[in-house]
Amino acid sequence: MVLHCLQNDVAGGASQYVDVAQVVVLGAIDLGLSASLAAFITALQPIMTGVLSSRLTGERVALREWAGLGLGLAAVAIVIGDGIALGGSVIAYDLPFLAVISITVASLIDRSATVEGMNSAPLLLVTFWHGVASLAVLAPMAIGLEGLQAEWNANLVFAVVWLARVISLAAYGLMFVLLRRLSAPRVASLTYLSPPVTMVMAWMLFGETLTLAGLVGLGIAAASVGLTLTPRRPDDAGTNARSRAREPIPAE
Image (cartoon, rainbow, N blue to C red; front, side, top):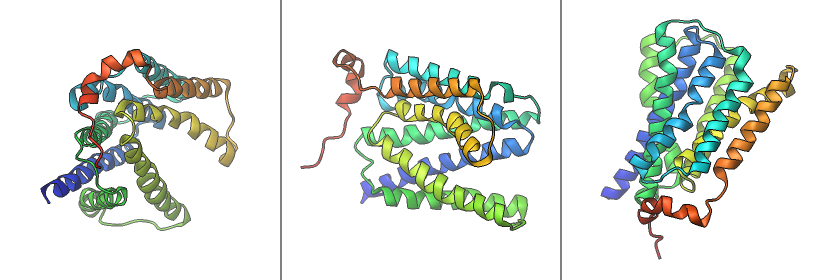
């Protein structure tokens, strides 16, 4: 019973940090921060995850993985470079860094529980606690700051459905699945695919022009993720001895 409660606490706690990250980025853009600059700041998250991973989960980041993380950050800078513009209040600049901290803490909490053998809760249950955590965090803000007022139209309905189903359920659900199989920095490296994939989606859906810099950034981002996700060589195993010692023992 105690272990079951701990598992639920891990799921709910990680989900709260994930929801904070999503909300504060949207809030920063609403306060005047350019979407490109917000995207670049949040792209620092894999770097922070790599820095903290060894201390919090016992999983060290190999040199090859560090190279992939650095290359990915460069790819994001190439894709959004011309779109970065200064503007907005001071708090608008602080919020994306809060998002970076939140999503980093969420992934490391979940991964640490997996390494310690405490994260065997069903993924549907994790998703349920994700929704409960969302309600606990966002409902007071929606009531206190906005009075639950909204101008309902087709665009708003589409945005709500997209955020609820694709972002909250599908994307973050897949994140928790991957965190049970891969180290947190390797999962975080997938963040680098977001700007170039968004660029391609904008080209397909809205007819936006694909630039040479964007295509180069897409190639570099793909290479960086491939470099980070490449299975470790046998000679890298010694750098991760601590994490292997803490891997959960499968139940017979």
